[in-house]
Amino acid sequence: MVKRLVIYSDGGARGNPGPAAAAFLAMENSEIIKTDTQFLGIRTNNQAEYEALTMGLEYALNTGAEEVICYLDSELVGRQMKGEYSVKNLELRKLYLKAHAIRIRFKKAEFYNVARSNSFIQKADALVNKTLDNNASIVRSNNK
Image (cartoon, rainbow, N blue to C red; front, side):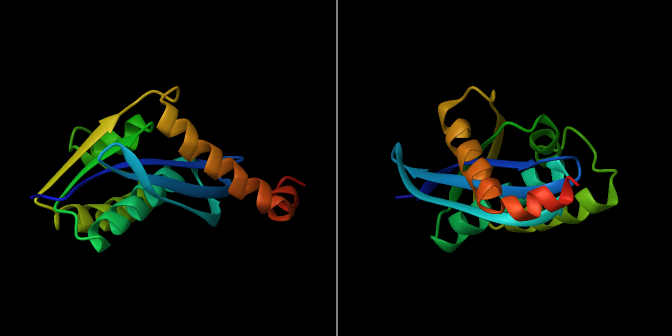
């Protein structure tokens, strides 16, 4: 049986660029089996979105998943991963290449854009905001 994981990822920055965080939820058979979040330091929103996707892809790869279905609310990142948009920004290109290098290790990898109203994206977003709140001193010092 092929092991398939579903990943919901979200990244965000308070300010653009600004203090940023990334989070993902991994699901198997409609159950959340893993959540993770990371404070990233100063990043743009798009960089944080890529970092979140990469975290989720790395987790899926490390579990031995053969297929991964990724849902994200970033149209830019989703379309770049599907090859519909080119990656012109140098910093984003580095992050894209890192995510792509992981992606090609799966038998199948799919990427879908979903609305911010998606309940699992909202859970990932809540993890991002909690992580940013927990690093509030860094967030505040950046906004001075």
